[in-house]
Each structure stands twice: as structure tokens, then as C-alpha cells.
Length: 524
View 1 (spheres, rainbow, N blue to C red):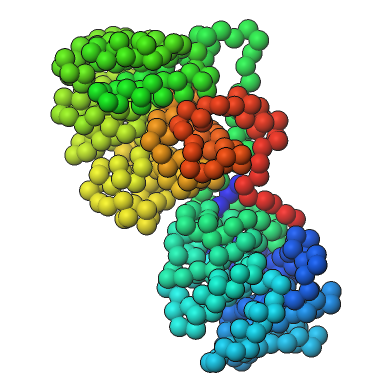
View 2 (cartoon, one colour; view 1 turned 90 degrees about the horizontal axis):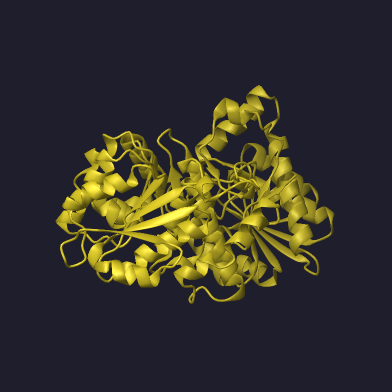
């Protein structure tokens, strides 16, 4: 599913109106009529009183269309307009007048707010049509008070196109924002609806067709893609009956240090569980007895260390010799950050010609050495959380999170690597400028070890001849999907990293057979 910025959506509207010849009132009519239809199907059984809060722009015009159809069906409708009726222009004014022609009630919201508060009190459901996707400055004044009152009402809220107060580009809350139970958006999902925290305010998201022809994608472009079951099924492989372990590759995992053998174990086990034919864990020889005991199906390859359990640069030749005929290298989980480890990581990356999946301390080893990343022709994915990426580029996690897409896109292009920026709403940026947004996952993943499982998933898939983009998309999707399945039956507190491996094969078959959950709905 393609995803657009508000600016790109405006270009789609313009193309549909000026080139395809669809009148703008028709687009607004389609949006409002289908919003009402779906709202009625999902929410209006047994509810009679609808309060619609309209702004002065086209989002408010959509709200008036919803109100008109609700009046026709004999619902009790109150429209609260923020401002004066004379403030409305164009299509919004047209639909306000149509609403009034049916004797629809419009409450002009100026101080004081008694009539507004009464309308909310009497409402069975509230429709938020205040701001659209083009909002770019913080909400203040009357709108701030109104949004706060809506949120405090305790009533179910339906948002038209986007929850008012959410930045359509970033998902940032612009001072304050409506918390919607369900958002009906038009033509395409918007970036701010699928990125945190906007995704939490959006609630259930349904994309409504408003008659914009799909070929516009090739004419105007798009800003990213959302990974869903349809995308995954487009490249998910089937196993041939003649397959053997060599068919699914050999993963090398370079990981572990004192106190962090668990990270090495989890990444290795995840790679094997997701289907790699063979996995060998390269481990400092001092720690090998621990991993020999901890692992069963995973092989170990001990190399010289500092006698304290940390890798040393002198082990490079042994590692390079062993990795020569292997398929992919996972590097980083639990490595530690001492100087010797960092030197070894950079030398391995610069001199061993294999696909790499780099995480955790493997990423930290490039702090101050990002030229090593961008001067190589390796096929690589790095999987930083915002703190790790911030350290690489000398900024703060807050700054990274404020521009997750643009930061990831820019660095992926500059360094020539795939970047999976983890966090709520993971972003995969490819070197060619492609952006992929992952809709799966929840706060249960905010726990030590979950990142090691994700790294193992990506590396294990890459060994099976998936491209690194495909491996990362499928690995991240499954990682979050497993967590979403967990919280359906448990809580979002008690998930352990290894729980993400339970039922993995069953989940893959569920997705393969088209029986997976829907994260973003489409509606005609």
C-alpha cells in the first residue's frame, strides 16, 4: 500500500481535478458520503445523536457532507462550526449551504462555549472535521480548547481524513490533537497516520476511495510504501520438496562478550528458527564453554580473545577464513564497545565481501568512522534504534525521531546501506531512496533482547536468497506481528524475547494463505 505526504496528496487532487477532469466538489462528495456510509455501518446502530465539529477549510466541508447524509437518514445532527458561516469559501461553503438547505442546525462557535458543551453532552458520537492533513503549526486559541473538550468528553470520536492536530508528514502532535477511535482517510494513507505518535491518535484506519485513478501513482509518484500481507506475499518463497539444508544458506553470527552471551544466543537461534539451513556463532574462545552449553542446533566457532572474553583484532584472519564460503554475516549483538572490538568490526566489514546485517555494538563501532560504511560496496542493512543512529551522526535521539523518514533516507543514500530505524513505526530506507513503513508491533517489544531476535530474523532470511530489502521487510513485519499476536492473549508487559519464536512457522503460513490480520483497511 502506497503512502503519501500531505503535499503529494495535494498534487494527486490537482491532477485528478485539472488533468483527469473530476470536479473538486465530486471529490469532497465522495469523501464525505463514504465516510458517512462506513460510520453508519460501524457505529450508528442504536445511536441517534451526532455532533460534527467543523473547521473553516475543506476538512470542515467533508464534515458538512457527512452531516447532510446523516440528516437524510433522520439522525439528530448538530454541526459546530469553529468561526462564522461567512468564513467558509469554495467547496466547504457549498456543502455548508446544502446542509442548511435541509434545515440542518449550525452552531457558530465563538465565546462562550455553552452550546458546544451541550452538543457534546447530548452526542452519542462525535465527528472531528476541524483540521486536515495540511496543518503545520501548533494548535492554539479556540481550537486548542475545543480539542481538549472533545478528548475529555468520553464519547467515541470519528476523525475525517486525519485526527485534528496531527502533523500529516511526521505524526507529531502539534500542541494538542484529537484522539480518534477511527479515522477515515481519503485515497491513500498519510505518513503522519502510520508514524508514532500519530498512529496512536489515529486509532483504526480505513482508506476510502474517492475516485482518484490509480495510474496517478506513476505520474506524480509517492512517498513510501506500507508493508502489509499483500506486499509480503509478493515475494514470500515456497520450499521445494527436494530442498536440503544447503538450500537455505549458512549464517555467520559474530557476537557476544562477558555478560552478553544471551544476545549472541538469541540472534543465532532466531536466524535458525526463521529458516536458515545452518548457523555458526563466532564467539571469543573464553566464552565458548558457555555457548556450547546454551546452544544445541547452533554451531560455534571459537576465536582468540583477550582471555577476558572480548574479541581482539588478531582474530581477523581466522574469522575471514571461516566466513569465506558462508552466505551472510550478522555482526553486533552483545559485542561490547572497547577499542579492540571496534577495530575488528571495521576491518571485518571493510575486507570481507559478504552481505552484512549489523546491529547494536556493531553499529556503535562506526561512531567516528562512518566513512568506512560509505566507502564500501557491501550489501548491508544496519538496524539502529534512534539512540544508536544519533551517536553515529552526532545528534540526539529526539532529533532523529523528529525527522525519522528524512534522516533515514538521507543517510541511506549517503552511505549506500539499507537502514532499518527501529522504534514505534519502524522505517526502512533503501539506498535508492525507497521508504518502507512497518505497521506491526507494540510496546511489548520494549524489552532487552527483542532487537537481537529481529537481527537474527533478517540475517536468517537473507541466507535464504531473499534480497536484503525483502529480508528486512519480512523480518520486521514478522517481529512486530508476533508481538501483536502475543498481546491478544497476554499483556504488553510480560513478553520475553524468545517468546517471539513461538508459533513463528504458523504465523508465516497464516500470512502466506492470506489469513493475516489487517492493519490498514481499504474500502470502496
